[in-house]
Structure formats: structure tokens, C-alpha cells
Length: 408
Ligand SMILES: Cc1cc2nc3c(=O)[nH]c(=O)nc-3n(C[C@H](O)[C@H](O)[C@H](O)COP(=O)(O)O)c2cc1C
Image 1 (cartoon, rainbow, N blue to C red):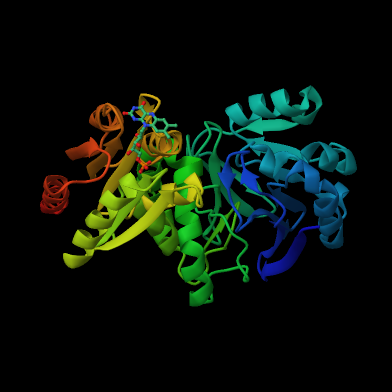
Image 2 (cartoon, helix red, strand yellow):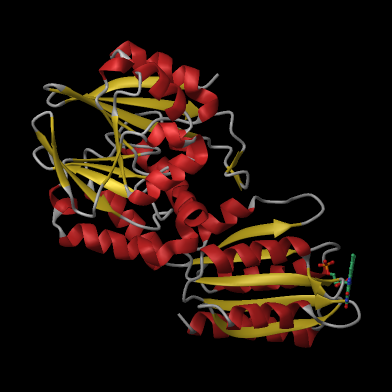
């Protein structure tokens, strides 16, 4: 069974986290390999005359969640439940909670959230639902709660809560990441350093399809001044940001904008019998000779890396090199799938070099070229030939790498 962490995170106001550490999950959203696991964070705030629950947990962990909650409060005493976003990893436990609460609590969320909850769990759960307007403020237990919509981070229903007096941002999925950090917050730099790549992977796989909204919505929050003055950012997954709250949104912005790490070149290829690989060895030699740091993912008869990991490498790469064999008059299926996901979720203005090998007629290179030319990526060159690379192919490959690097 996953561990549940219940910790007090603030004295005034009295604030707790209930964090379910899901180490059993294999594929988030039935798609993304996450051997690192994920946490579902709910928060409980006890105020004068009001007790507010922010989000819940996944349905399969309802019992664990309710047990942990009952250690802090009698569920009947909860007066408000803030639903930042209705995805069932945060709302699956809602029907059971409302039963235990006797349907006393007022639910607060966007009008989209109301519609989605009704669809997921039936009419009864939304009988006492208050649909907020963007920027609306409510006084609850002597505090001012400001609700701000951040649509498409990553569903249309998403909002965040800003507790004005205490400068707390409950940021929902924005600011979240994969992984089960050892600590609750960002106080340990080593934990943060280990965690941030999981955040990048989370951003690309979960929010990447809408990545222009990352930059847009963070701009919106910054313009309100709440990011700079925030005392704490409390996301729905992963670490709480307390030591340096602005850092997590800066990281989100960098990923959204695709800010590169100097020298990092993503190299992705398949090779069934070693012909593409012999080309990629030349490419890698050349990259290293020129002082670059290639990060390599290859599909062979011995390796099949997770596409979610490849996606996580794209935002901070300076450039990408894709190697593919022609397979049944198309791109090799594993590279094809990885590429389609990259184009959908990690579509950036970065240069791309294509390398191909074929048996009887080159198709992979052309097909990749067509896909790339319809994306934000810049097609630099395609170097494709039959079977074993000849001296002239090797020369063309070296030239291709030089061309790619001169693009930077
Ligand atoms: C299952 C399979 C399908 C293939 N389909 C094609 C094809 O449609 N057209 C072609 O020119 N070569 C085709 N080939 C040949 C490969 O593209 C060629 O051998 C290439 O050099 C493979 O490089 P690799 O060993 O690095 O994967 C195919 C090979 C295999 C094993």
C-alpha cells in the first residue's frame, strides 16, 4: 500500500498536507511510464468557524485518504472543498468524502468543474456547488480566498487559489511533477535537484500538448504580483515550494519556452541490425569532437526506452538528431511513435538533423522531413542511404552535424 504523509506545514493558519505517495502506479494516465511514481497532494486548512479541504485523492486510495483525513478532523466538520481541477487523480475520493461529510460542505470550483464532476460522479455531488468567476474573492473563516482560472493547465476546468492574507498559492497541477520526493518541501537542495527532471517530464507529458498556455498563465499570475510575493506554492503533485517559491514557476517557464542547456543534443534512433547505428556512431563522434554533450536514446533488439523519458529531454536540448530505418515503407514504428509524441507535446523551434538507412528504397527520411516541416522544428538536413555507410556517406554525416551546429 502507498505511504500517506500527513504533516502540519503552517502554524498560522493551521495548515496540513495529506500526501498519498503512489509507488504502485506504472503508467500515468495509462500512458506515461513513471517508475519514479507520483504523489497526490491534498491540503486541509482549519480556520475560525470554517475548515477547508483543497482537493482529494484517487479513487483507489479513498480508504487511505479518508483514514488520514479523519486523523486531522471529523469529515462532518469540513465546510468547504476547493476543487482546483476535476481529473480523478484529485477527485476520485470525492463521492466517499461527501457521504462521510453528510453533503454539508460547499464545493468551490469553475463552472467547467461543476459540469465535469456531474459527468464523473452524478448530480448529487454538485448539489452544493459554487461556480466561481475568474478573480472572484470569498471570505472564509476570516481569510480572503481569491480564485483565479488558469485554463488548459491542463484541463479547461483548472483554477488556483490565492489566500491573500498569508500569500499562499494552491496551484493545482501547475507547479507539480512526477516522483515521490523524500521531503515534503524544497528545503533540501539535493532533493530538489533530483526532482526537477521529473517536473520537466511531467510538464511535457501532461501539459505539453497545451504548452503555450504555461507561459500565458504564468504571465497572468505574475502580472497580478502574486508569484513574486508568494510565501508558499502548494501544488497537487510533488514538492511544496517554500524556501524559494518563485523557482518552480521559473522552471515551468523555462520548460514552456524550451530554454536550452548549453551543449545538450538529443540523439534518438532505432537500429534493427546496426546500419543506422553505424551512422549514429559517426554522428556521436563528431558531436563529441565539437565539444557537445549528446544524450542518446536508442531502440534496438535489446533496448526500448520509455517515450515519456525521451519527451522530458526535449525542452532543454539545443538540437535534435533523429536516426531511423525504413520499415515497411514507413519510419520504424518506435521512432515514428516517439516522433509523433514529440511533435504533439514538445514542439519547439529547435534544429533537427535526420539520418536514415534503407534496404531497397528510402522512405523514413522523407516522411520525417515532411512531419518536421509541418512543425515548429527547423529541418536542417537529411542524410539517408542504403545499407552500410560508404566513405561519401560518412562525409555527408559529418557535414550534416556541422550544419546542425552552425544553426545554433
Ligand atoms: C521488418 C523490416 C522491414 C523493412 N522494410 C523496408 C522497406 O519498406 N523499404 C526498404 O527500403 N527497406 C526496408 N527494410 C530494410 C532496412 O530499412 C534496412 O536493412 C536498413 O539498413 C536497416 O537499418 P538498421 O539495421 O539500422 O535497422 C526493412 C527491414 C526490416 C527488418
